[in-house]
Image (cartoon, rainbow, N blue to C red; front, side, top):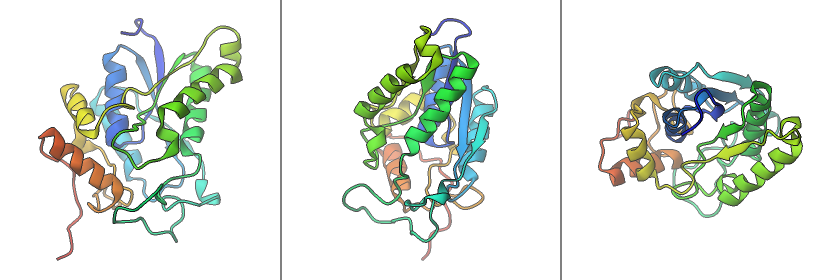
Amino acid sequence: MAEAGKKAVVLLSGGLDSATTLAIALREGYDCYPLSVDYGQRHAAELEAARRVARALGARAPKTVKLDLTTFGGSALTDASLPVPEAPGEGIPVTYVPARNTILLALGLAYAEVLGAQDLFIGANAIDYSGYPDCRPQYLQAFEALANLATKAAVEGRRLTLHAPLVHLSKAEIIRRGTALGVDYALTVSCYQASPEGLACGRCDACRLRRGGFEAAGLPDPTHYQPQPG
Protein backbone atom coordinates (compact mmCIF):
# COMPACT_ATOMS: atom_id res chain seq x y z
CA MET A 1 0.00 0.00 0.00
CA ALA A 2 1.11 3.54 -0.73
CA GLU A 3 1.73 6.10 1.95
CA ALA A 4 -1.40 8.13 2.66
CA GLY A 5 -1.76 10.89 0.08
CA LYS A 6 1.14 9.71 -2.08
CA LYS A 7 0.60 11.08 -5.59
CA ALA A 8 0.66 8.98 -8.73
CA VAL A 9 0.04 9.77 -12.39
CA VAL A 10 -2.05 7.10 -14.13
CA LEU A 11 -2.20 6.94 -17.93
CA LEU A 12 -5.90 6.51 -18.71
CA SER A 13 -6.96 5.82 -22.29
CA GLY A 14 -10.53 4.78 -21.51
CA GLY A 15 -9.90 1.14 -22.41
CA LEU A 16 -10.19 -2.01 -20.34
CA ASP A 17 -6.53 -2.22 -19.28
CA SER A 18 -6.08 1.39 -18.23
CA ALA A 19 -9.37 1.35 -16.29
CA THR A 20 -8.15 -1.69 -14.36
CA THR A 21 -4.81 0.01 -13.73
CA LEU A 22 -6.52 3.08 -12.28
CA ALA A 23 -8.62 0.85 -10.01
CA ILE A 24 -5.47 -0.93 -8.79
CA ALA A 25 -3.65 2.34 -8.08
CA LEU A 26 -6.65 3.66 -6.15
CA ARG A 27 -6.96 0.45 -4.16
CA GLU A 28 -3.26 0.67 -3.27
CA GLY A 29 -3.97 4.05 -1.70
CA TYR A 30 -2.44 6.42 -4.23
CA ASP A 31 -3.77 9.92 -4.75
CA CYS A 32 -4.31 9.44 -8.48
CA TYR A 33 -3.97 12.02 -11.23
CA PRO A 34 -5.31 10.40 -14.44
CA LEU A 35 -3.77 11.56 -17.71
CA SER A 36 -5.36 11.04 -21.13
CA VAL A 37 -3.89 11.95 -24.51
CA ASP A 38 -5.80 13.06 -27.58
CA TYR A 39 -3.17 12.22 -30.18
CA GLY A 40 -5.35 12.18 -33.29
CA GLN A 41 -6.59 8.61 -32.88
CA ARG A 42 -9.49 7.49 -35.07
CA HIS A 43 -12.19 8.33 -32.54
CA ALA A 44 -12.68 10.41 -29.41
CA ALA A 45 -15.02 7.88 -27.82
CA GLU A 46 -12.21 6.45 -25.68
CA LEU A 47 -11.48 9.90 -24.23
CA GLU A 48 -15.08 10.24 -23.12
CA ALA A 49 -14.81 6.69 -21.74
CA ALA A 50 -11.78 7.78 -19.69
CA ARG A 51 -13.86 10.53 -18.11
CA ARG A 52 -16.68 8.06 -17.33
CA VAL A 53 -14.29 5.54 -15.80
CA ALA A 54 -12.56 8.11 -13.59
CA ARG A 55 -15.91 9.43 -12.40
CA ALA A 56 -17.25 5.94 -11.64
CA LEU A 57 -14.13 5.00 -9.67
CA GLY A 58 -14.22 8.23 -7.67
CA ALA A 59 -10.98 9.58 -9.15
CA ARG A 60 -10.19 13.06 -10.42
CA ALA A 61 -11.30 13.93 -13.92
CA PRO A 62 -8.46 13.14 -16.33
CA LYS A 63 -6.19 15.91 -17.54
CA THR A 64 -6.17 15.63 -21.34
CA VAL A 65 -3.14 16.56 -23.41
CA LYS A 66 -3.73 17.26 -27.09
CA LEU A 67 -1.07 16.53 -29.68
CA ASP A 68 -1.23 15.48 -33.31
CA LEU A 69 0.47 12.24 -34.28
CA THR A 70 -1.39 12.31 -37.61
CA THR A 71 1.45 14.64 -38.62
CA PHE A 72 3.59 11.51 -38.91
CA GLY A 73 0.92 8.87 -39.57
CA GLY A 74 2.45 5.44 -40.03
CA SER A 75 -0.37 3.67 -38.20
CA ALA A 76 -3.95 2.71 -38.98
CA LEU A 77 -4.90 4.64 -35.85
CA THR A 78 -3.36 7.92 -37.03
CA ASP A 79 -3.69 7.66 -40.83
CA ALA A 80 -7.22 7.33 -42.17
CA SER A 81 -5.90 5.95 -45.47
CA LEU A 82 -4.68 2.78 -43.70
CA PRO A 83 -7.53 0.37 -42.89
CA VAL A 84 -7.74 -1.26 -39.49
CA PRO A 85 -7.14 -4.99 -40.07
CA GLU A 86 -10.10 -7.21 -39.21
CA ALA A 87 -8.35 -10.58 -39.48
CA PRO A 88 -5.40 -11.93 -37.50
CA GLY A 89 -2.09 -11.39 -39.26
CA GLU A 90 1.61 -12.05 -38.82
CA GLY A 91 4.06 -9.72 -37.11
CA ILE A 92 3.42 -6.36 -35.51
CA PRO A 93 0.10 -5.04 -36.85
CA VAL A 94 -0.41 -1.73 -38.64
CA THR A 95 -2.34 -0.52 -35.58
CA TYR A 96 1.02 -0.04 -33.85
CA VAL A 97 1.53 3.71 -33.39
CA PRO A 98 5.25 4.57 -33.72
CA ALA A 99 6.74 5.46 -30.32
CA ARG A 100 3.29 5.91 -28.74
CA ASN A 101 4.08 4.55 -25.29
CA THR A 102 7.37 6.47 -25.21
CA ILE A 103 5.45 9.67 -25.96
CA LEU A 104 2.68 8.92 -23.44
CA LEU A 105 5.13 7.96 -20.71
CA ALA A 106 7.22 11.07 -21.37
CA LEU A 107 4.10 13.19 -20.89
CA GLY A 108 3.26 11.26 -17.74
CA LEU A 109 6.81 11.75 -16.50
CA ALA A 110 6.59 15.51 -17.05
CA TYR A 111 3.24 15.70 -15.25
CA ALA A 112 4.58 13.61 -12.35
CA GLU A 113 7.61 15.86 -11.95
CA VAL A 114 5.40 18.97 -11.84
CA LEU A 115 3.10 17.33 -9.28
CA GLY A 116 5.95 16.07 -7.15
CA ALA A 117 4.75 12.52 -7.78
CA GLN A 118 7.24 9.65 -7.76
CA ASP A 119 4.92 7.00 -9.19
CA LEU A 120 3.66 6.57 -12.74
CA PHE A 121 1.20 3.83 -13.79
CA ILE A 122 0.62 2.36 -17.25
CA GLY A 123 -1.72 -0.45 -18.29
CA ALA A 124 0.78 -2.16 -20.62
CA ASN A 125 0.35 -5.90 -21.05
CA ALA A 126 2.70 -8.43 -22.64
CA ILE A 127 0.58 -11.61 -22.49
CA ASP A 128 -2.70 -11.18 -24.41
CA TYR A 129 -1.67 -8.25 -26.59
CA SER A 130 -0.99 -7.29 -30.21
CA GLY A 131 2.79 -7.69 -30.04
CA TYR A 132 3.64 -4.01 -29.72
CA PRO A 133 7.32 -3.67 -28.73
CA ASP A 134 6.62 -0.81 -26.30
CA CYS A 135 4.50 -3.07 -24.06
CA ARG A 136 7.34 -5.44 -23.13
CA PRO A 137 8.79 -5.57 -19.60
CA GLN A 138 12.28 -4.84 -20.95
CA TYR A 139 11.05 -1.62 -22.51
CA LEU A 140 9.27 -0.51 -19.32
CA GLN A 141 12.38 -1.19 -17.25
CA ALA A 142 14.45 0.81 -19.71
CA PHE A 143 12.04 3.74 -19.58
CA GLU A 144 12.15 3.79 -15.78
CA ALA A 145 15.95 3.90 -15.98
CA LEU A 146 15.77 6.75 -18.50
CA ALA A 147 13.31 8.66 -16.27
CA ASN A 148 15.73 8.49 -13.39
CA LEU A 149 18.53 9.91 -15.51
CA ALA A 150 16.48 12.60 -17.22
CA THR A 151 14.72 14.58 -14.51
CA LYS A 152 15.67 17.21 -11.98
CA ALA A 153 13.54 15.36 -9.41
CA ALA A 154 15.53 12.14 -9.75
CA VAL A 155 18.88 13.93 -9.70
CA GLU A 156 17.79 15.52 -6.41
CA GLY A 157 16.86 12.13 -4.96
CA ARG A 158 13.16 11.83 -5.79
CA ARG A 159 13.34 8.77 -8.02
CA LEU A 160 10.40 7.69 -10.14
CA THR A 161 8.90 4.20 -10.05
CA LEU A 162 7.10 3.02 -13.19
CA HIS A 163 4.26 0.61 -12.34
CA ALA A 164 2.85 -1.80 -14.91
CA PRO A 165 0.63 -4.04 -12.74
CA LEU A 166 -0.93 -5.86 -15.71
CA VAL A 167 2.19 -6.65 -17.68
CA HIS A 168 2.31 -10.35 -16.78
CA LEU A 169 -1.47 -10.98 -16.59
CA SER A 170 -3.68 -12.61 -19.19
CA LYS A 171 -6.71 -10.65 -20.38
CA ALA A 172 -8.95 -12.95 -18.34
CA GLU A 173 -6.87 -12.31 -15.22
CA ILE A 174 -7.05 -8.58 -15.83
CA ILE A 175 -10.83 -8.73 -16.16
CA ARG A 176 -11.22 -10.80 -13.00
CA ARG A 177 -8.97 -8.40 -11.09
CA GLY A 178 -10.84 -5.34 -12.29
CA THR A 179 -14.23 -6.90 -11.63
CA ALA A 180 -13.17 -7.62 -8.04
CA LEU A 181 -12.16 -3.94 -7.74
CA GLY A 182 -15.52 -2.71 -9.01
CA VAL A 183 -14.58 -1.68 -12.55
CA ASP A 184 -17.64 -1.34 -14.78
CA TYR A 185 -16.27 -2.49 -18.12
CA ALA A 186 -19.44 -1.36 -19.89
CA LEU A 187 -18.07 2.17 -19.46
CA THR A 188 -14.82 1.40 -21.31
CA VAL A 189 -13.98 1.51 -25.03
CA SER A 190 -11.20 -0.70 -26.42
CA CYS A 191 -12.13 -0.88 -30.12
CA TYR A 192 -9.70 0.60 -32.66
CA GLN A 193 -12.57 1.80 -34.85
CA ALA A 194 -15.43 2.46 -32.46
CA SER A 195 -18.37 4.55 -33.63
CA PRO A 196 -18.72 8.15 -32.39
CA GLU A 197 -21.09 6.74 -29.75
CA GLY A 198 -18.41 4.30 -28.57
CA LEU A 199 -19.93 1.18 -30.11
CA ALA A 200 -17.29 -1.48 -30.82
CA CYS A 201 -16.82 -3.02 -34.27
CA GLY A 202 -16.39 -6.54 -32.87
CA ARG A 203 -13.86 -7.40 -35.58
CA CYS A 204 -10.55 -5.65 -34.90
CA ASP A 205 -7.68 -7.09 -32.88
CA ALA A 206 -8.59 -5.11 -29.77
CA CYS A 207 -12.18 -6.40 -29.92
CA ARG A 208 -11.03 -10.00 -30.40
CA LEU A 209 -8.65 -9.83 -27.42
CA ARG A 210 -11.29 -8.20 -25.24
CA ARG A 211 -14.07 -10.64 -26.16
CA GLY A 212 -11.72 -13.60 -25.66
CA GLY A 213 -10.78 -12.27 -22.23
CA PHE A 214 -14.37 -12.20 -21.04
CA GLU A 215 -14.96 -15.69 -22.43
CA ALA A 216 -11.85 -17.06 -20.69
CA ALA A 217 -12.81 -15.29 -17.45
CA GLY A 218 -16.26 -16.90 -17.57
CA LEU A 219 -17.92 -13.48 -17.30
CA PRO A 220 -20.53 -11.83 -19.54
CA ASP A 221 -19.14 -9.41 -22.08
CA PRO A 222 -20.70 -5.96 -21.37
CA THR A 223 -19.24 -4.39 -24.52
CA HIS A 224 -21.65 -2.32 -26.60
CA TYR A 225 -21.24 -3.52 -30.20
CA GLN A 226 -22.26 -1.99 -33.50
CA PRO A 227 -24.96 -3.92 -35.40
CA GLN A 228 -23.23 -6.65 -37.36
CA PRO A 229 -23.93 -7.05 -41.09
CA GLY A 230 -25.98 -10.04 -42.10
